[in-house]
Image 1 (cartoon, rainbow, N blue to C red):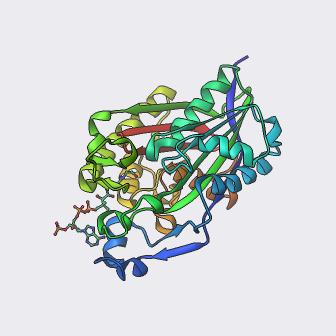
Image 2 (cartoon, rainbow, N blue to C red):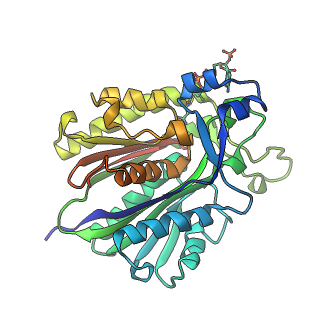
Length: 321
Ligand code: UT7
């Protein structure tokens, strides 16, 4: 009998503090009008001083476990996507494991920048469908605010903090129909976060996000268009078979271009970028959780998730919820 993974529960967490475009306009030369028009972002949530990737992950994970009615002790695997880990090592997944009071199951991080959640979901799906795990916690969590240059108007307006989680469990029916992941390290200089601790003597780089926005934008739109085709083709589906698009939330114009490619009206696209900005690997599970909890995404519907980010690394997942 075939084995698949299905999403049994979802969770999400956003820090309490909200920073609006007007707040940012008091710090750098920008305006609410420019930010909304070019990005679709209106506000973003920023972690408090005592919050970290693992503390936010715990809240999202506990919610997802509760929704799935699964005890943390019954998890076979914890996979956590982040580019803003509490520590370089141990992994933030290990810190989350300790917070959940669990021992022994494998826990590890995945780093694929904004596509981290899709990469983590893909690994979890392989473990379950191969019969090597039955219950896997998959988390995306980011404190981007600590890696942002708050004086750089071209990046500081974009990012936010938060965490999202799903619990996958084995099933005899899909569930996840396919995942697709790709990378191309030749684009590493267009979008990156330096690590001064590893750069050797003479490095004067600070640890803040660098991006050549308009270059990233162009590649993102083209690449996401291609991965939509690849995903539908592998499953023998038509564009009209997709009920919901749950995209990575970097820019409303990128999201709209992918929706157009799918001939999907924006009412069928889960958009959170206006309220949350770009939360990197947390954006897809946060958006998915929101739309499941408010009743938009229902059991039996077909959902396409897609992401693009630093690396470049990009990917998609097609699933029946
Ligand atoms: O999540 C990972 C993947 N990341 C992405 O997918 C992000 C992709 N890139 C983008 O979303 C967009 O490129 C941005 C939103 C980052 C920038 O939008 P853009 O339309 O590509 O603007 P631009 O970078 O080409 O800049 C246009 C102008 C420039 O001025 P000049 O040179 O034309 O005089 C910038 O200096 O806008 C200026 N500008 C700003 N003006 C007001 C840049 N940032 C701001 C700002 N406020 N915050």
